[in-house]
Image 1: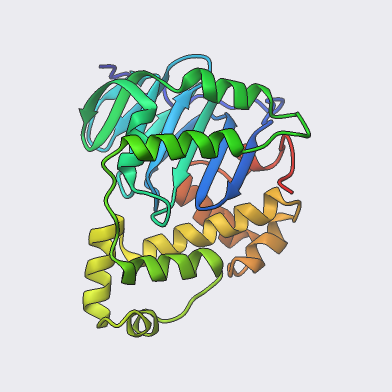
Image 2: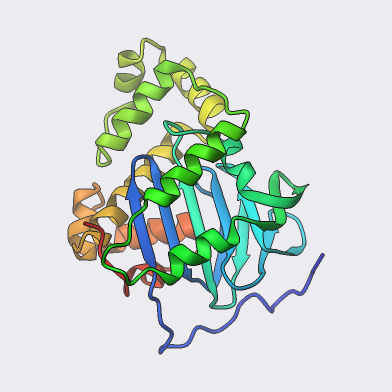
Length: 268
């Protein structure tokens, strides 16, 4: 274990190449590109992390800094990252696709640390190939889809309650939705209190946090399609780009300019 306070706040150079690749479709969010320091944050979906060319540092809430090559972090688990400006693959899957168990076959040589699974190996070469091919106009996410399908078959994945799945599917199709919880609960045939309890139990984060996560995803999807920050923010239901940027930093622990200002390609 590594415990080196102060080292994680590394300066970011103005001439750094943020040539990130994003792909968002079919209930997954894929990012691969340079990252620096991501302050304490938690996501609305489980995530797989892989250092493309070397190890990265991970610190779970209340723990020490760890050096690892891969990791799987469940939804709602607080953590920090220090990637030194090196490229990192980040893959989220939404609950309509699978739960956190579907990501576990992607890592190897693992151990559990404060709610996360950290590894020394895994699907690194595969992710490196996707990263190094990022400027190819024929780049496709089909190999990633095949890998996830294989991983799901190998995992012990739990099926979520169809009433909650219905709401998740609706939010994924209507990222800007701000319907009252009472309305969504009623449509699912549940009381408001039962709906919120069941949602947290099944998804791993409270409903309001997941809806905020989904709005962030909606804005990112618009940006990687070519829209500017202001337009993307409005489409996702944010008041302006500053509001979106504030929520982005809360969600990812870093500014939206890291990873979104310079893209290797736009998503068709």
